[in-house]
Image (cartoon, rainbow, N blue to C red; front, side, top):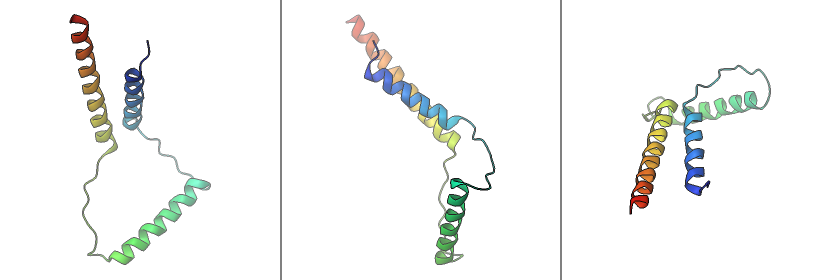
Length: 92
């Protein structure tokens, strides 16, 4: 029987594997993403101009691979705990 726990585990596992997968590097010269990138560059340039050179803050970056690994570790831990509980319920 396909339960909600199994569905949630499969969805989370799929999402974490998607985060871990390598990204394709394609250059687009036109289209939505090109316009979005140029708009975003303008927003960032405006922000940096308002902040000045000394106004920036150091923010730690979370690598997508590290985020995917952490998510996969959490999902694996939850799946392990769920399987242990299921075994304990079957024994009792």
